[in-house]
Amino acid sequence: MKIVVAGGFGVGKTTFVGAISDIKPLTTEAAMTSYGEGVDDRGDVGTKTTTTVAMDFGRVAVDDAIVLYMFGTPGQDRFGFMWNDLIQGALGAVVLVDSRRIEDSFPALDYFESRSVPFVVAVNRFGGQMFHTVDEVREALSIATHVPVVSTDARGRVAVKETVLSLLDVVLQRALAKAKSN
Image (cartoon, rainbow, N blue to C red; front, side):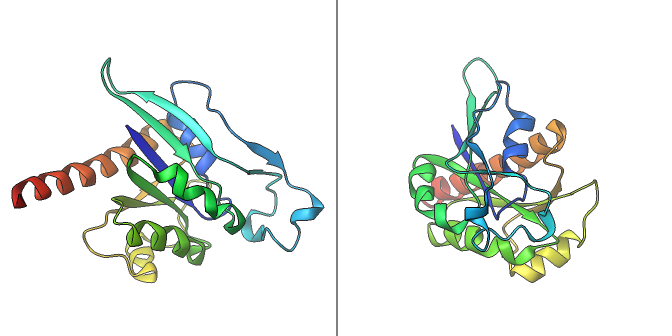
């Protein structure tokens, strides 16, 4: 089963995939160079020296029969064309949010909403703290009440697991509602 992890530049997608993966994650991190200046706004992540240029990939064995494949998207707009390929066959998505840069989340939210892909919004606790509450983030992003907004720490396996379980619950509830209506 495939899960996509998306969000703006520097929100922690690579870290999120790596925190839960049972294998050493495949990453396509490349050094940020002067060519990216004026294109990639480092903003509050000024110390960031690498960026994902294709995708991140991790694997989580739930049991012998169920395996989750985690795909992290690149966060810059110029790599947006890859999202259509990455989302093919996905159960759903985690939209990772940096509450210091809430506005960077709109493209990912719009993308999944417009394609009716189940998703959860996960506010990453950078340095263990949140800069806005979950309710403030929900309101700022105008997130529908049926979409879970959770707090997470992309560095911690347990927090990432809880976030993925929130997504799986959304997927299950949607499947049950669809089955009930048929």
